[in-house]
Amino acid sequence: MIAHKYEYRERFEFEAGGVLDGITIEYHTSNRNYVPGSDTRKVIWICHAYTANSDPSDWWPELVGSGKFIDTDKYFVICANMLGSPYGSSGPASINPATGKPFFFDFPMVTVRDMVRAHILLRKHLGIEKIDLIIGGSIGGSQALEWAIMEPDVMRHLFFAACSSKVTPWVTAFNESQRLALEADPTFRACKDLKGGSAGLKCARSIALISYRTYEGYNLTQSEFDPDTLFADRAGSYQRYQGDKLVRRFDAYSYWYLSHALDSYNIGRGRGGVKAALSMVKCQCTVVGVDTDRLFPCLEQRYVAEHIQDAWYFELTSRFGHDGFLIESKQLADIMRPVLPK
Image (cartoon, rainbow, N blue to C red; front, top):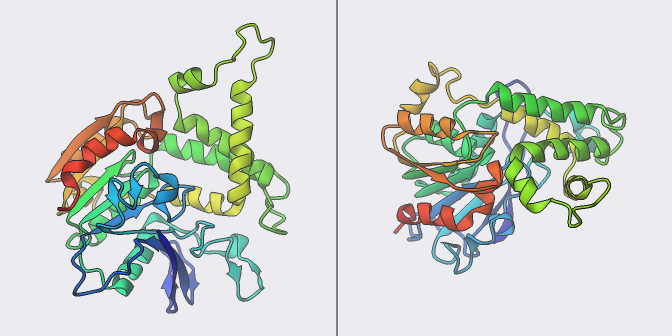
């Protein structure tokens, strides 16, 4: 997929307060540009998850790419990096023109609705009038569902997995635990450079992984090779490795902002509640849960499917919890195949 940047040079007001004179949106598309009015390709828009980037062929390689299940040659496939992320879109890691340094905590607080409003600006800029299929998992699914409410006449089919209609206290508790890890690192609030809070970010990632995975998954993949090992450490080594891996590609400030963005998620806010908001969805929907997801249990996806007029519910079987929507590619493809644009 090909990377692009869209510079929106008008005033952008954030839902929680704060204004920027413009925002940048990093996005990836199929190799051939979209031609408004004459392009016959169906549009598939993918909303990425928490620490992913806007290139789904990078983090969903089994599903997205040239000649693959979501064929970037056949369809016009697009994914935009969400606000607050360090992968090119405006966020706390962006340079503040007033100081010449990263915004850090001077960046406005970001909500899921802000992310979707940025996507809508990009959609209009590209001249896309209809989205034939919008796909999202986790916070990507939150964006997709929010978008189907904000622009109900634009979507033809919504496919989302492993998310809910509103943040729960359970999810917020994990988010706050991760923020406490960031705050415990004295370099985090110093704001000297984007390496600040790296030790806290490593710890936060370790906390997050436990919420993403399962007892069964860890026992399957992280058991000691030697059953007589004196001090078990294989799982500990895995936690450290994953923490270091995230620190090399992400920053603590973006992570802090995105955790708050997830806490902002409530499709019912200002709309008379969740049920009323779900009734605003006009497109057909496929809702997918993961049977072992501890972060967003299947009861939450079932609830969404029950309160959207035209929705089907399916369930992935996985030993890997919330991350099952990224891992169980064959099952996901089997569920998605009937709704791929013809």
